[in-house]
Amino acid sequence: MINYTERIALLVDDIVSRVPALQYIDTRRLLVFARFGRSDADGAYATCHCLNLPPSDPGYYFWKDRSTGVVTRRSEWFVTKSPTVQVGTTPIEYMISFCLPRFCDQTFARSKKCALYPGADPWMAKLDTIVHELYHVDPAGCGIRPILKSDGSVSTLAHDPSFFREVARMVRAYLESRPTPEMYDFLRYDFEELQERYGGVVGTAFRSFPSFPQRYLEVTPEQPETAEPGVRVEPLKEHGGQVCYSADDLHVREFRAHASRRLVRTGEHRAA
Image 1 (cartoon, rainbow, N blue to C red):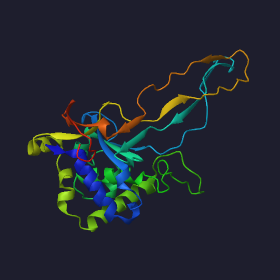
Image 2 (cartoon, one colour):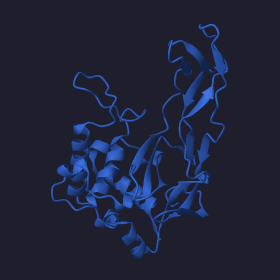
Image 3 (cartoon, rainbow, N blue to C red):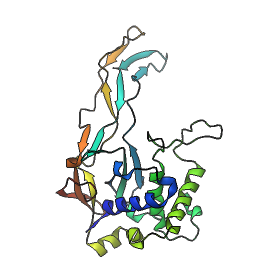
Image 4 (cartoon, one colour):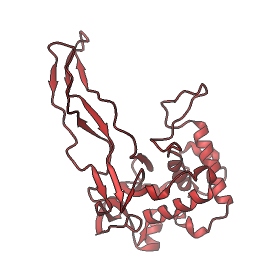
């Protein structure tokens, strides 16, 4: 069976080594893993997840009376934190998840980025998505790449037209560097073709599948007094789950059209 996340991880190494605009990325600190996503459902094909954001400033949720606008209750004070993921002695700073089999069946159909690739083969949409997620890695090494407005301020958007154009430029730069076709040939096949060709599709996933490391809430040790009298303080439901992950928390899953199943456990994230 083809290990799809392993092949993507190898391709990511090759892309970063060949495209100067992405060479700031340390792929040793980047983890590729798989999530389940049906091809006949809407949703993202892939997502870049940042693990190196610092804890947020303390804050709380609050609720107001709809008629008066008066705060009637609030949550405990909390901070938002990032989980830690470490493979061996290497801390992971970014993860990219790929939804299988949805990603395998991606084409330019109904995609705005089709205009950036006139006459291109459908599989190029998958290469664009991989570069797209890599470009989300912030060169400053903290968070997701910010999108700047013309006045220099940070936009609330995750993308703008220049983002998509730059991704297309990097895709072309990679192919013009003449990589070995074997590095990306697996992208040419849709999910059904992959199953026929390799006998199945597997990928790295977290043992807690379908969950994976995400930002979580933690109640602050000190709880400041509220300035509003009579406001009820609601206990905050904390994460309560796992916040530290290692290679032992990774395993291999086989992905099918409408489900997935666990195969074997591994401690090596690239070969999982």
